[in-house]
Structures are given as structure tokens and as C-alpha cells.
Length: 93
Picture 1 (cartoon, rainbow, N blue to C red):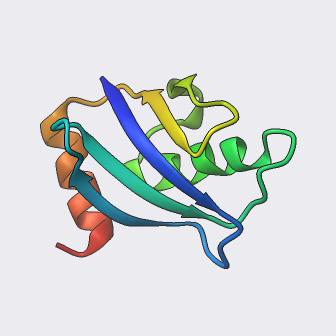
Picture 2: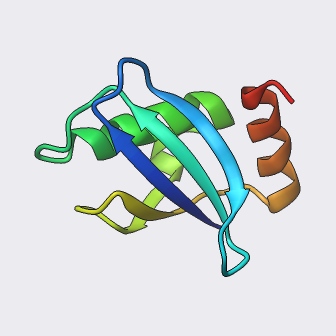
Picture 3: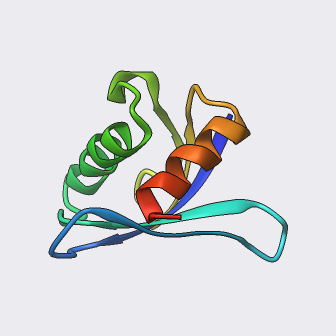
């Protein structure tokens, strides 16, 4: 499934900040990253961070769009229900 992600690089800690719907009804995951957006470092950190939080290998995720943007679309091997459960757990819900 496709996961929409909004990235904020340069944070002290890599973590999920929010998971909410945008105006078009897409669920968007907001993530702060402890990496700078230089030579793909933030993209690598995003995959590492999400692999830990979602409990999936980073090699199973693919960055489809947004290689140089803060708005990204990733292909991940989870269905919506499992994704929601793992994100809620990470957010302490």
C-alpha cells in the first residue's frame, strides 16, 4: 500500500509526530528526522526510522515519490489495519 509521509529534517530525535487525514482524505504520517536533507541522508533515516516503528525490514519499503521533497510517498508491505495499529502503538494511543 502507499503511505504518504511529511518529513521534517534536522530534528534532535527521529520520531513519528502525527498521523491524520489531509483535505483530500489521504492519511499522512508526519515524521521528524535526525538527519539533514543532503545526499539522501534524510531519506535513509526515514527508512530506518519507519522500519523500527512499523517492524518491517527497510529493504521492503520503496520510496516512490519525493526523493528531494518533504512530502513523500512510500510503498510498504502492510495493509491499512496493521499500519494503523502499529502507528497508534508508536504514538501511545
